Length: 178
Image 1 (cartoon, rainbow, N blue to C red):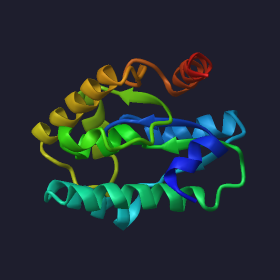
Image 2 (cartoon, rainbow, N blue to C red):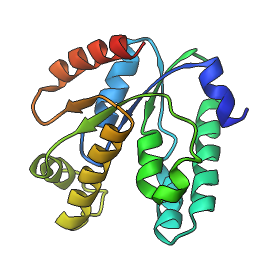
Image 3 (cartoon, rainbow, N blue to C red):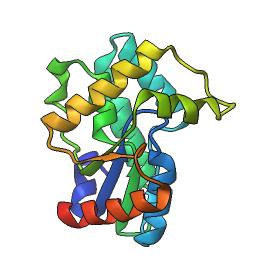
């Protein structure tokens, strides 16, 4: 399967956003509510390699790796409905503007967004993750917000609502994106 085939064969909704914005919790719950399959393509060492490659200027490699990770995630999917944990906003946040037009896999996406204080609180409760400096998080929060505006992606402020209310809002947004 090629990444270009995925949107022809699956009904995909993606929750994207910076670390600590609630996208993993919400995408798991949304998948259950929608009777969809949950996929998280950029997880683990391979996702970290994608990030490090992009940060070191190996943009073509990072882009090819992202495509491969998405294809691998979908290779075991047995449901026609899929909720993705991270998608094209994550990839575009890593690529320079000159490479962004080359990324064509753009499923229906909702940005999960929160203020810095909220993500700091959420991330500090995770023992397995290294905490980056404030500037790092502020940069990516701003970048995701800018990308959402540029690509007309709806934004869910996860710092303003409880989990159940976020799911209700996600269901409304999913209907609007259909």
